[in-house]
Image (cartoon, rainbow, N blue to C red; front, side, top):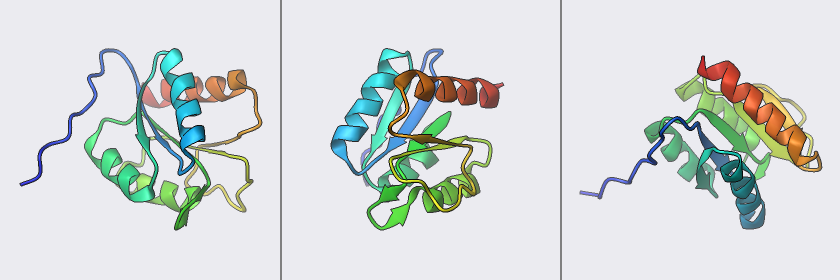
Length: 128
């Protein structure tokens, strides 16, 4: 039997799942979100992110669009099939052809303030 994975302790903090196969980008987004009061789960593969999403009380997903073996749009569809009310944000340097199943798109070149404004808005809007 596999040992249970610990679930982050959330005391009044929204939990954001970040998905990016680029470790530098993943750490950067993590640092920004943690500095702004969020609890964060990090995943570098679609498979890991789906497992975390199923098990944890995720308030928001921030995913890169170009992932190994899939796209952020395809992954968003899988998240929405599991938990339709959890917002999904694509955070990418590449514009997707479609944004179906996605609640917002943030270009990686946007200022941190714009990124945080969208994240904050979606967390507040969907947590009430």
